Length: 277
Length: 248
Image 1 (cartoon, rainbow over the protein chains, first blue to last red):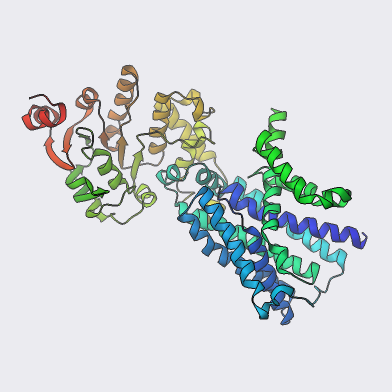
Image 2 (image 1 turned 30 degrees about the horizontal axis):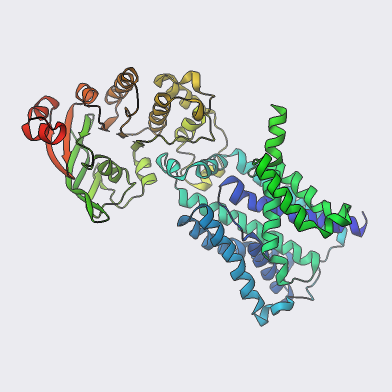
């Protein structure tokens, strides 16, 4: 495997973990989040900071996931008060608060971010394989959730919260669980990105990144693990196979989002299901 | 008879208008109690306060010996307090049997951890199928609730509540919008529940069916209890006829 392929595999893997993590919150549990890149960033900054202090890779990854998950649960508390478009605006605000915070913190490198991050100790190919192993574990976990009673209950919460309460579901706890798991996995993706890029900049975790993750989930089909898997790989590879696609990435993503919303709101997964039926 | 539930001096106001103004009543184990009264009397409000869907401004709700006033709705459901909505609320993304399965598997959904570590749906499906059979919806098990007419959706609402193994079932206008034949059939269905160990509190405007199925009536008017007792005696009272039917 060449260094280029290893790099591509790593980027796809990190994007897959990010898309799966948002799919748990938005796809499984029906809670809109437009600030998911903030949790990716929280994981990355935590891991980078600890790595520079000399902490080993397993500890930095764990700490990044734990920090993002803990803050994710706090942010998830807002989902108990607001719903739908109000929740979308609130989570979008969280993304801006995160960026506004890190850009002003000298100890986090301010606008220049954190550079000089120590390596993982693995060569690029081995590190790419480590990311693939994490992708397999996260995807397996998502499939497990989907087919467990947790997935069934998330579906009910996403469908009708008030009806879920009348069948004894503690809606608040399930929503916080979705936020906790989803944001912790985004933090894990952030930690993995740190050792891949060895430098982090605040702009990597901006609103456009949040929308890019959401695009992968929506185009794949919110709630579908395999749909999100296929869409994330396709959308990550798109700029690699065409220079024009790279230049017009945002335009293409936006147009695809509109087309999917118009013709197949259930995404690729729903399209495949309808064709098969 | 033992007292299964008791509400003491419930008050609640919406925008300065008192919807419940000191409602107190008891529900005896195994009875079929109907709450009646004119529009705006506070029947549904009282039921929703007992279910935990509304928090009273004042007063207490007891279920058995336990004060459940501060318990959320889902926790009361788990104690055995079932509820059906006046406007049916099925999960439209689920099939009919899946709607009942989620309720039938209420032990699996008790906590996220329990739900994450439970996968088999066989027992819940069998229980749900049996309830659908009993309630006359077995043929519709695989259909979306969107495909069901109102009468069947109302039955689904009851089926889902029964799958929670309730001790007390609060029914909010289950006959509303049904044809005369459907209303009679639904009334017969819920009338049989006390015989199966489920105490019933019914809020209903269909007075003919209420008088046919209820063991006891509580009449509410302007957020207060106006009268209670066996249907024949209560309906013979002049003040009840004035308040409820406008006929002296």
